[in-house]
Image (cartoon, rainbow, N blue to C red; front, side, top):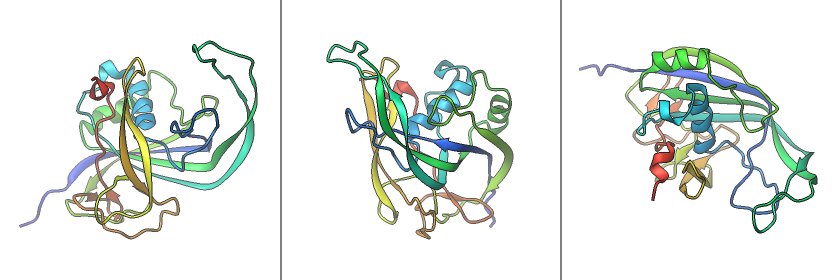
Length: 219
């Protein structure tokens, strides 16, 4: 008996430069090798017009690749102990170059294709001055596990790559963050089979991440 495939929107975002600060480090600009789920979820919510237009159970899968990396100088606006602005100054900032983010959405794929074709707020990935390119198409996912490659996946037996502690969801007032432990291989070459994942026609694993909605960070 053949199991019917799952219909999904595959959205590919490209940006010449992107930067994702690691929030675990205070006072220094340490970069992450990929965007955290909270960042990607926030970009999708911005396209929809805000989190109020996104289901609290909304999930997506993602894969990421950067062809290079470097360090540049950006103006840093530090805050004092009471959260007040102090004198800005230059600071090194790690960045990723020629980046590609692929997102799969299985819940209401046609609705999300319409949302992303006409986003309410501009699509940005990691740096406010850099807009992204976008390619959208509907695809069919097979109901059997795929190869991890460049996917960001939850840390579980059988997955590979570097273990990363990343923000999954952030409360609207930013008073609480839900953290998760994930695995990511920046080379995109790991062939580990991701348990309980779908797979694309090319064998890429598609595994839904925990919801990034701020409601999940309510205490």
